[in-house]
Each structure stands twice: as C-alpha cells, then as structure tokens.
Image (cartoon, rainbow, N blue to C red):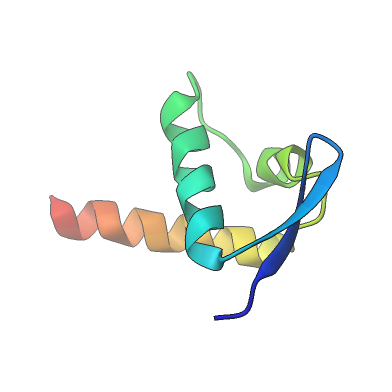
Amino acid sequence: MNPINVGINGIEISMERDELKSIVENVLLAADQPVHVDELEKIFLNTVEKNDLQLILEELKEEIVTKN
C-alpha cells in the first residue's frame, strides 16, 4: 500500500491509508456534530485529496451498516 503524505499541525508526515482512516474515524467519533468532508480537508491542511476522504467516509459508513 502506498503511503499518503498528510499535513497535521503544520507538519507533513507520511502514513498508510489505514492510519488515515483511523484518524478520520476518531475525528467523527469525537465530534459533537456532523463533520463535512470540507472540514476534514481543513484538519489535514488540504494535503489529503477530497476524493480520498470521501472514499474513506463511504468505507466507514459501509462498515457501520454491515455491523448493524
């Protein structure tokens, strides 16, 4: 799997997609209101493609649906 370069707090790091997915999931769980994909882009300082974030959100949604 190819690493993804991500900017967090002004620092660019390289992480695997599963790590990024885990961070997105934790952001969603910690939020007290719905989080739009544009807000996720801001969290990652626009270093993650919007399409990648949308795909991760769809995967998380599908996982929740199949668990219930």
